[in-house]
Image 1: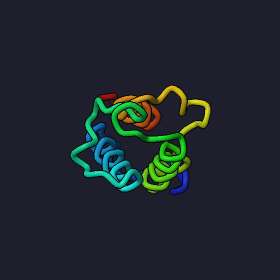
Image 2: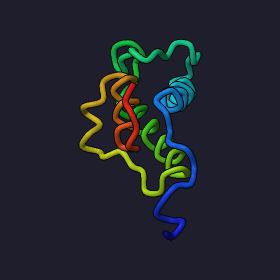
Image 3: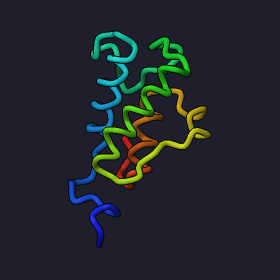
Length: 100
């Protein structure tokens, strides 16, 4: 099987995805990582606007694209992601793992 079509690394866990989301959101929003909890809502709790979410998606696609070739988050699904947990569950499901 060509290297471009599969990943030789272990599957990404929900905890790993949460850590990525938390790190990127803290950087994008210029807040402390401890502010970002699994149940944090993007708009209400973190004051994240649509531009911040697009930046988050791009960062996740870049990070996870290294482990899973072709990983992407569909633009039409962004509206359904209201919380950190939504994002983590979505990413884990897209990667074929077990959601948080």
